[in-house]
Length: 378
Image (cartoon, rainbow, N blue to C red; front, side, top):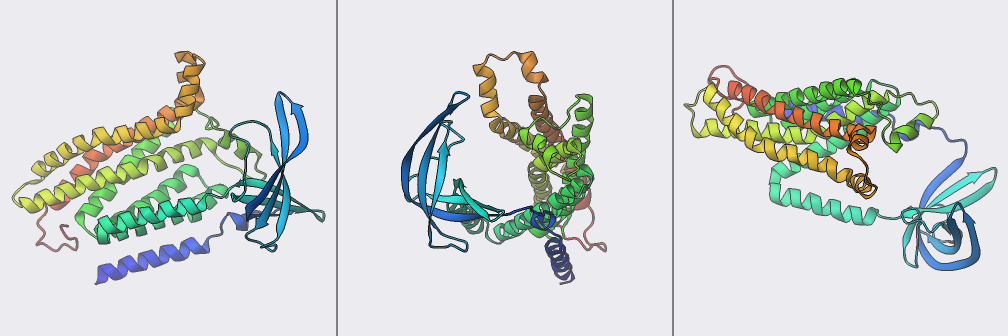
């Protein structure tokens, strides 16, 4: 009962802290009024307008939309949609398409643009399917997993990102928050148990190693953190001071956390179950069994990280192949080098989490549970 009260108290405190911290909207002040509203396309009419600039041929569409949200909900509004003939940039709309309108009001003048297509309904369907699958298959453990996932998302968006915007050290604040997220996740899913403690320590150890390695290699390889277009755009945000190099290391350990937690919990849980099946096993035997399980998991999980990063960079790799880019250009470009460091540093952290978890779990589980212990074996 005391354990449950303590867990409820920790969760309540975290939620209060999360919602008491200002979000991005609280931290920014616009010089003009702008908003985004939903609308549905009623009619599309091609205008007799064409202009060529830098080999791009621009055309215009007169689009009539019905407002679905905002002060003018239900009104018919006409906006101009400009097409450049560039796939990936143009938004070619047709009747019944739902779109996002960008509305800006400055000096008494209001202008409206089609900003994007509305995609959230389909994302919501996928989220519902995901939640149902977790709950139906996972049962109460699935519900706990969703609670842990929700707290992780809130911690990132309500604590980590606002703290980074305020100029906090990326590596330190990320490590602090990830340690808290790991503790909560493990204890929510596995309770106040030995395997939860072992999995937590193994995860934290692996993530710290990944972060230190990423920072060290990043400095030696002269990685600036400005390899992506998004990171360069941060330079133009007024009043924003960020340690981009630290942000790179922080991103690497965030990317490695999920897989590392998975490996650590799998090993800790396996050792706990082995001890249950054979209570006579000593710490050395449990350590050996945990390492065997870890080696099997290690091969697939390192593949998971490498393939995840490769999948993200697939268009870039095809671009290199299409233009017959030489190996010296590819592997010395900061963009590719950054992804290699990201994948390998995360994988090294995952690998080191195996012996750390196996050692801690075998030590804790092998203790005499009849002697003054507040931790369960499960």
